[in-house]
Image (cartoon, rainbow, N blue to C red):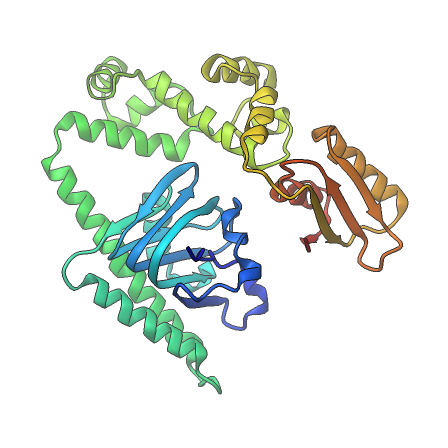
Length: 362
């Protein structure tokens, strides 16, 4: 089976702020096969059009299965990884947010919680395929025309306006057939998604929905089996789990980012909901990761023994079982991490949080 790469390009090096390529079984160089199978994120919008075959991914902790004639949109910063592919063909594109008009960016970013997955109907696959082919041809055109950037802007917006229309129309059809209670549940979940970091009280959400707290709780329990408080806590703790799993932030930093001034209260709540303390959850999550190379090697811009020692201390504090050392005599200031299940993303987070850049080279 050929593994398909979720393209990991630095768009800053691309004159258009755009990377687009066909998805084919022969598309990915063998040396790069494993990159897409690690949890990673982009600061760009991503689009996958699958014309045939099947691709399974994890996006923000949720399994997403793409089948023939399906379209998926991934937003900037969303953590994702590829699990498997089978006989795929289609297109993949990553591009800078500046390409999207403000109106369409607002719809996409406010309406879509994780990844937007569409099963395409009728002529929709042909529509998207033709647009992506036009974008590909325009991006590859050399020498570039005077209005090449404007043309790419227009084509990408046409594609995303169509996707937004599909999303809103399908949401509208679903809403038309839903009961009033289901609509309240959906509106409540939409409000949680936007406000859970700043608002933890059910009364605030009931006020926004123009209903009483008792009506809100009765409706939620009838439709979901849970109270408003439970669903709010699930959103907060779910985000806390995500940050613990994919970053090196301290529990105090995480609590603050989620709107808690008392990190001890957050720890008690997390332990009550999850059944583990935040630190225990992080350790368990690391142990569940798939086996990584025992030695990770990074090229860094760290200079000076003092700075290197501080970083070694920070890494060992989080990963006491790892062997960590800097080779400052090497012109590339090489950092080596030795240990089972070492997670490259977390090492990068530690360096970046201290103002340093790094690049994994093995």
